[in-house]
Length: 206
Image 1 (tube, rainbow, N blue to C red):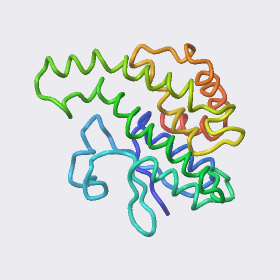
Image 2: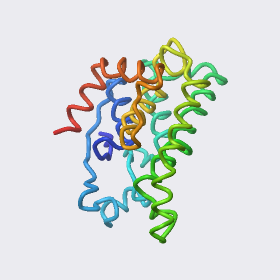
Image 3: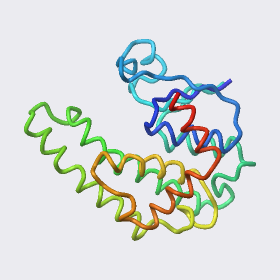
Image 4: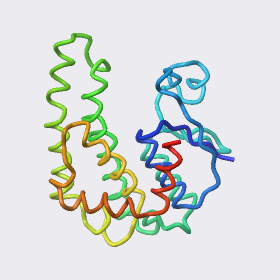
């Protein structure tokens, strides 16, 4: 059986939700960040990057959220989590998810993980000061240009939705209120109504 390695509330939540939306058979394996398990040899053998998520499949390990989400959509086509028969629409979906991964998530990391980019305490402090401004700019761009509605890509729910939802839940760390972004806030509300989302949050809270 495939296994999803996760930490509660991390970006792995997007993959966790997607697996539940697909009604997939999988096991959850907690990687305890509190004890730095992600940096210990046992986990580094699974994911040498020392990050979550990692999805163990019968063919090997998949890492990086956009890749895992695309795999889930393709592995479980009956769930209709991506426009697999439309190359342009699928590319647009991938473009959105890669923006979340490469830009928005990185902006978020600067408020908590400044030591990845600098050793100087004043430089790290400046990253933390700047991060909310950068994060707000990313969210505003999504609100203004990249949210089709009522779901991220339009009429149909997709793997972009649990990913945006997961990141939206990080906004309070930056002092950002999702209600300042009506489309994104309504998306958050709609996501919280979905059984797969409720179950994922319940399990991760145990």
